[in-house]
Amino acid sequence: MTTASEPLHWLKSSHSDNGGNCLEWAPANATTTGTVPIRDSKDPHGPVLTASVQAFAGLVALARSVEP
Image (cartoon, rainbow, N blue to C red; front, side):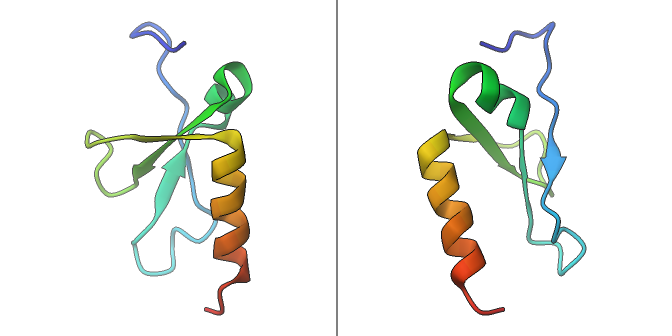
């Protein structure tokens, strides 16, 4: 579990320069808790969606399969 003294380390999508509609995720949290926090890179203080590692992997697979 992450506490106020242990802030999440957010990483931007590798496609973050392609139009600005991007996500950030905290992979270290996934390793320690089994859940993946996801947020809008334009709103770092906004809501955070939490997905299971398996659900996040499915989301990534879906995103990779869609034609740009």
